[in-house]
Image (cartoon, rainbow, N blue to C red):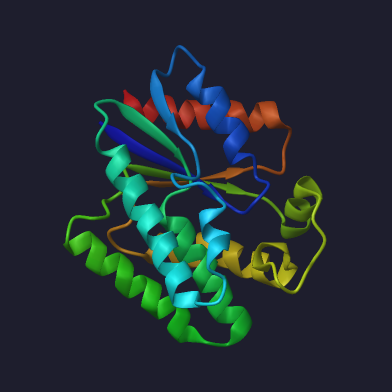
Length: 198
């Protein structure tokens, strides 16, 4: 069994790629979408940030467990790496390093207790932050971190500079330039998947 995660900023094409590789008969992979829980659950309790973080952490742990239930090669739209990237950006934007430190601690504890596992391959789709908002048709809004160009730049910094130095997250890390036409990106991702599952 191989577990592969597609990671990167919003609008890099992860969901579209997952759909295409899931339908590719030459790959024989099991695609797993971004959300294990319905998205509305995350909006039910906006008054307690700790509770919301616990729901997100439970989602990543549940998704990790789901990936390891199948006997086959898994390709996942995002993984717990997203939680690290998001909170890294949030800690930078808000000037509170403890936000990211707490999530790192959760990840390390969950790994030690077998609730999170090492990825076999993490493919980071790289795109310019302004392009993310254009593709998602978003404008910057104060209450949505993923729309902030500053936050997106920090997330990109996490993927390019921090993630490669993190131990016990992925056996292999690959970067794909997603600023190019979709078919070129799909070909590169397909080639990486074939090499990983052979």
